[in-house]
Image (cartoon, rainbow, N blue to C red):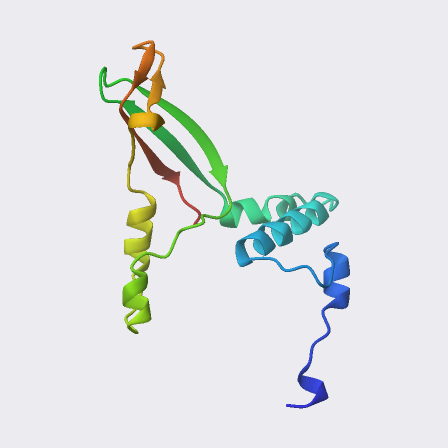
Amino acid sequence: YGPQSVICTNEFATALSLENDEMQDPNEFARLLFDRMQESFRKSSDYRLETLLPSIFRGTSAYVTKCHECNGHSERQETFMDLSIPIVNVEAKCAGDDVDVQRCLDAYLQPELLVGDNQYYCSTCAKKADASRSLVLETIPP
């Protein structure tokens, strides 16, 4: 307690090119911090530094969309350094129960139905059709 327990973050914020009065959510801040670290590492002559963050945090995912009429599918791959997994079962958390991370991940990866106004344009069928879109984690960080 007392004046020694207060930490001034001005220098840290300045190093990251942040405004001191700017609020950031945790994911946004982590992305910004990783980006600034990666920029700094690229300036180094040590190749290991340049590949450090990707070797620890990078994964690959694919959005797979499957047409329900012709069973054709399309795939779009992406790399990621983080996942924004929503918290499910908020009622349990409010009741004091634990939130199960696996349940949250399962909900995040649950296929999305593309129906009605949200139908998928299938290039094979040459029309909009009902479909399902899934996120598949192809490689995950170590």
